[in-house]
Amino acid sequence: MLSNVVFYPMKQQIYIHFLETESRLDSKLKETLEETIKVHAANACSLLGIAYVNITVYPNPNFVVPETGEGGYAASGDWFQIYIDSTRPEKELVKIVNENIPLTTYHELNHVARWNNTGYGSTLPEAIISEGLASVFAAENWDKANSPWVKYSQEEIDELLKIYKNRDKNLDSAYSHDDWFYGTGDLPRWIGYKLGFQIVKLVRQNNPEIGWDKLINTTAEEIIKLSNITL
Image (cartoon, rainbow, N blue to C red; front, side, top):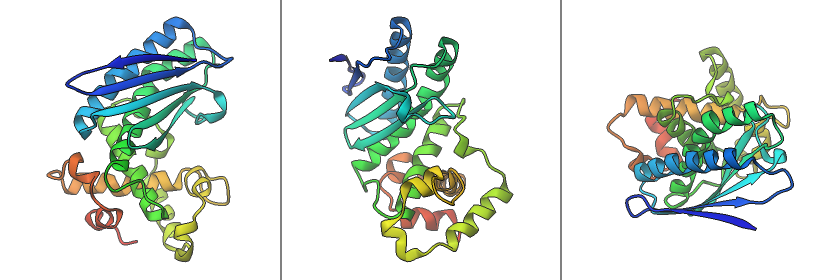
């Protein structure tokens, strides 16, 4: 069963769908979650030129980032999913909704916008840049950005760059996303996210005249060049 909300700011069509699960959200918290997504999705869509999008909310602890209690996945140019661990204590859930859900909304809508342009990408470098774009866009638009992959020292990023440069480039088209972004193998956790964040952050700092409308249309190769990082 789906609970649908339709929101039309400035001719945008934003559809929010709540999936019903055994672990249900409290009605008041669900209302707050709905409003939070609505407000930040409208802002992100305006910034990115998105006119139409479906957002599915799935309360399931098996799909969330353990460190944040929620997560997201953009499946296409008109749909993304938000996951939330509805089994957590009420006080923690309120914090997740108020602090983490806005970040995920911005992050995933940047992916949606890129799906409508260059696409997410099928190689490791392309995935790193797509995640970097989404992470920087979210951090720029939500001042409570606390994703674990935006926290690192220069020493750490230098070490991660060494790992990346020493990879087998022949595997870039058959890379393991879980290994490079979630550390399920021998690689450091969040390495792909951190590298992408650093690269795009430098692009934004060094090229303030390039807006998000152009960045989501720019290839990964060109974005790497703009960062002045040698890979």
